[in-house]
Each structure stands twice: as C-alpha cells, then as structure tokens.
Image 1 (cartoon, one colour):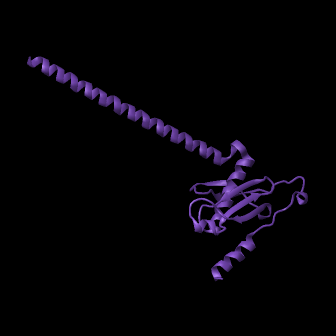
Image 2: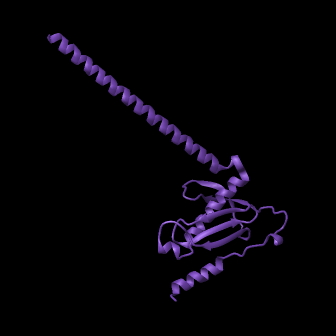
Image 3: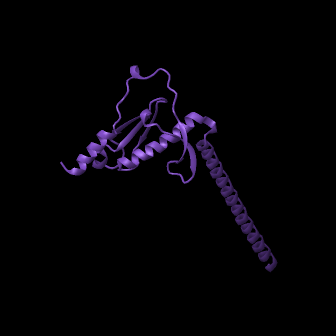
Length: 172
C-alpha cells in the first residue's frame, strides 16, 4: 500500500462526521449562524454569508459520477455535506481534489443557507436577478442592433435598385 493512499484513508477517517439519528436530535434547533465576510463560490465579489458551525454539519465522501472513467469510479472524492438543522444537502464533485471539493461544498452551503435564512432579501438572489436583467438588456440591445443593420442593408439594396432602374430608363 502506498503512503499516498494510506494518508488519503487517514484523512477520510479524520474528516468523516458520524450521522446523528433522529431520536438523538433535539426537537427544536435554533441555528447558530453568525455573519462574516466570505467569498462566494466562483465569484469575485464579497457577500455577508453565514458562518458554518462544524458541529451542525454531516460530511461524507462518496464516489462521484460523470465523465472520467476509472479515475472517477475508484476514488471517493465527491463531498456530500448536510446541514443538520435545516436538512440542506450539498454535493460537490467539481475537482479531483478532496480538499478543494470540501472547501467548495462549504462555500455553496453558505450560499444556500443565506438564501434559506434571508429569502428574497438575500444578496445572492439580488445579484442573480441583476445579472439576469443585465443579460436580458444586453441581448435586447444586440437584437435591436441586428434589426437596424438588416433595415440598413435593405435600404441600400432598394436604393441601388432604384438607381439602376433610373439609369436603365434614361439610356433608352
């Protein structure tokens, strides 16, 4: 057994959090969510996202799916993260690295929890709506420019046809 696979197994055992049965969970859970500056997954702007409490997370490492063949089918580098109080589940298999997938899963979980707690007041939803509106406006402007271009070409064709008609009528 290579030292790399041994270290990987040790890391998996250390980071695995055990599942808490329903009988042992408290009836009423008040999520302990603080607010901190955290960079959103894949974005360059900072948003106030809830800070995750590791005691409220259930983390599992499973085999991923999708393209990749043997490298995907034999390694357990897909992270499934579950927030116990809300029941929110995040599955992250974006890279081959377990550590990178763990970080990204937590970022995605923070985003989902903010949307869950704040609803329509969430900065993430506001940013998404603004982005969709900008794309819609950009597409609308592009279509208007294409229409203007088409009308201009039609006007050129009709003008050149009328000049040709006048020129041929005058020579006869």
